[in-house]
Structures are given as C-alpha cells and as structure tokens.
Image (tube, rainbow, N blue to C red):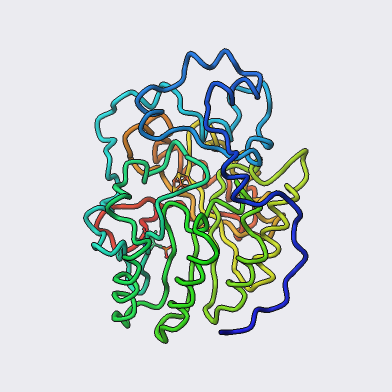
Length: 342
Ligand SMILES: *Cc1c(COP(=O)(O)O)cnc(C)c1O
Ligand code: SF4
C-alpha cells in the first residue's frame, strides 16, 4: 500500500452518490423547472424510451430558465428530432463493436488501449455515440476486469490506458482503486488517462477518496473532461465554483487537464460559442484538446454541422484566439490509425 499524499481542501457539498440518485429523470418536470412547459409537446418518443433523460441538479443550475435554445438544455433534452430516421446515421457509428475485444478493451491506436470500465453515466447526452452501444455485453466491469487486466498486462506495446465508458468516474472509489492499483503494477504502462464528464456535470464526484487514489498512483495522469459550451463551466459569469474547485484539486494531484468537445448544431456552432468555450476552459486550468465532428449515430442527425462550416469556424477561431486555445478539429474514421484531422 502506498501512502496517500496530503489532500487539498474539499469543496463542501452533498455526497455525489446522493446527488446522482436525485438527478432529474423526468423531462416534463425539467421543462417545468425551467419555465419551458410549452416544449413538452416536442419531446421524443423512441429516443426517450431507449435512452431516458438523466441530468444532475448541478448541471441544471447552469441552464438559463425560459430559454428553449439553452446550449446545455439542448445537449440533454430528448426532442422529437431524435425520432427521425436519417440515412447514414447508424447504431455503431465508429466501428467500436468490431474493434472491441471480449474483455471490454478497445485498441485502435498504437500504444494506447481504451478500457470500457462501466456503462453508466451521470448525464445522458443526446448526441452520444455510445447511446446504442451494447454495454451489457461489452462492459469489462466486475469479474471481467480480470480478463481485461490480463490482456493489458500481457501487451507490452501499450503504454497508456484510457478509462472510458460510459463514465469511468461513475465507479465507486473501491472499484477504481482496484483498477488503478492493478495498472500501477504493470511496468510497461506510463500513463493513465480518464475521460469523464463528471467534473463538469457532477463535480462533487471529485472527493477526497478519488483524489487520494489518483494522487498515490505512480502513473502520469491525464484527465480529459467533456465540455461543449462555456456555460457548462460558469455561473453568473464567474467560473462555476464547485467545478473550478474540482479541477484545481485534480491538478493538485498531478493530473494534466484537457477538454474534448463535440461540434453540435444549435449548441456551439458559432465562433462566439467556441471562443467562449476555450476561454472558459482556460479560466479553470483546462486546455482545449479535440473538437470532434459528430459521429453519425442514429438519433443525432439534427446536431450535425457540415465539414465546410466546421473548417470555417476553426479558421475564424484561429484569428481570434492564441494558438494554444485552438482545439484540433477531428473525426473518427473506422479503421483509421488515429483520429482524422479535417
Ligand atoms: C479516441 C481514442 C483513443 C485516444 O486517441 P488520442 O488521439 O490519443 O486522444 C484511444 N483509443 C480509442 C479506441 C479511441 O477511440
Ligand atoms: S458516454 Fe459521455 S457523452 Fe455519452 S452519455 Fe455518457 S457522459 Fe454523455
């Protein structure tokens, strides 16, 4: 057992599991909380049944009441646009099912292996490419981590393990500790990367237990948060206090902080929105990493931005911000050896 490093002051708040249990699951009630009852007639049918609404109060707090076009609301509200079938928008948009091994390990790129650590998320994002993913069969959790860890242990070409899902930080500290301690003990691994939306949507998750288990790991640590709009990181034009504290605490434990966003029509498809996102990230110590073109997943066609517009947006962004605040515009092409620049 390695001793835990001293912990930074903790943001005070309700236990994250309780906040998760109390997350909003009722679309009609959410609309009523936001003074948007009239939108109830536009709620999805099929989309809602297959992938129900889920959003924590902490994220709702950052939405603008009375605004049907709020960029945070649009990411999570199941609208009737989802029910439309659009040719080319399919269930496994990025070829993951094919690349996935039985153990829940996805290896598409040299040196890096991605572990589907869990299928759960604290928020359901309508554009999510994993919304139709066969988690029940794919999740490496529980007994099958054994096999996944065996696979990682036996492959010396891997130097970075990426915990993904679902949201890996939805696992308990005990489960995460089991996983991270096992990875720590594999000498060929150098880097642990965690992709999570929780520091943004449920910052209470970044608690003393999580910080101590990250702090004691010998691995280099990268935390990639997923924020798509600057308003996710702000409240009343200030950095959102709890999210800012969560990110600062991760940084104090040695984590490099990056952001991955998805370009989404009606959410962040303007130069102002993208510049606002980069600046809000920088304010909380996070560097922009990727801006992804949408994966063409069934039910998400209404979010798509065409490539010409996407390139124009990034070119305009480059004339407004320093180079280090420009994310790389990429898409995931099945079978390619890396994310593909556009
Ligand atoms: C996106 C992805 C990665 C990480 O790619 P980077 O370019 O290193 O961020 C690794 N493995 C899989 C399967 C991925 O989809
Ligand atoms: S995997 Fe990520 S994008 Fe998809 S629903 Fe979960 S948190 Fe949202």
